[in-house]
Amino acid sequence: MSSFAKSAASSLFTGLVGRYQTMLKIELDRAKAEVQEKLKQIGIGAALLVAAGAFAFFLSLLLLTAAVAGLSTVWPVWLSALTIAGGVLLIILILVGVGVSKIKKNSDLMPTESIDNVKKMFAWE
Image 1: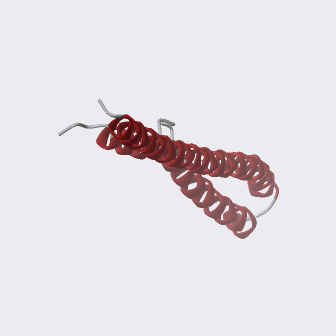
Image 2: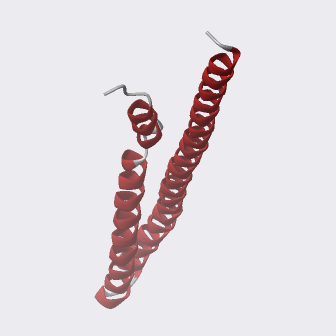
């Protein structure tokens, strides 16, 4: 094999390896970004659950107020307190539903898109 052929083959191989290194680095960066986004969504879901817990605490205070008002006065006072408690309960249920769905949707931290891209990149078809 001539030195020109060796040089051409070496250049070709070096270029090919360099290209795959670059593509692999890009996919690793994408995987990192994908995992970060999933973690961010899980954090949002967890924060919504914490907010629901805070509203649940206030709900218990409202229900106690309603019980006291119901025992000490006539119907309109505790009925209004129970109505407010019902509204807070509705908020809690909405926050829990959204929070749980965000956590379930993003609980798989595997960067599937990046893995699929790497598999396609190295597929010899």
